[in-house]
Image (cartoon, rainbow, N blue to C red; front, top):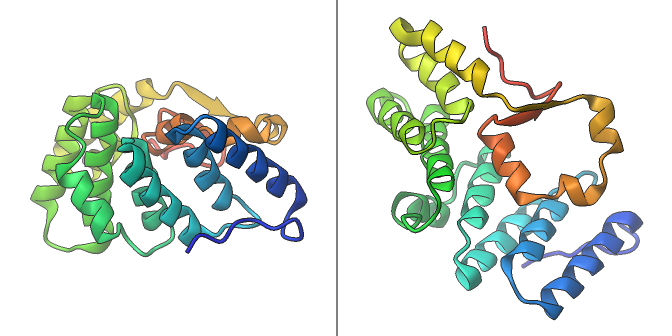
Length: 205
């Protein structure tokens, strides 16, 4: 069950929620729902269970690959892993998505293996290589692959360094409007390391 934000929870987030709900009703489509899911996971509410549920419903209704990618990423970040339904779609259901989104899916599956499995290095390596082949202009797949391929480590790290496109300062993030912070495409770029903040900048050394 999705628990929506109440006026008592956080008034500003509640107002943004109501705006997104109105948009979703006026022009049905995935974009306002994806943004709403990110809002539900936004501090201080941080209700990732509701966000995950909304993302799954958005996938079922609109088949937007970003819903699966964001849901899988939230599961990993919360320490619960990628849910079985999300994992199944990542493995078999993103063939119609853009190469960049398919690359993100392969990266998240590799991340899941690295975080939750042992002795599956070959599978993780294959997924990271697939991610890079699908979309070479990313960062985090190179970084993870560098950890698994010590002989190529320096080359992979140097390549990753050249792929970072934007690094936001803390002050820039603080000044950024909430609407910009809730961009699902921006979040995909963060997952792939293409853009990051001073706090989350990938460790390249």
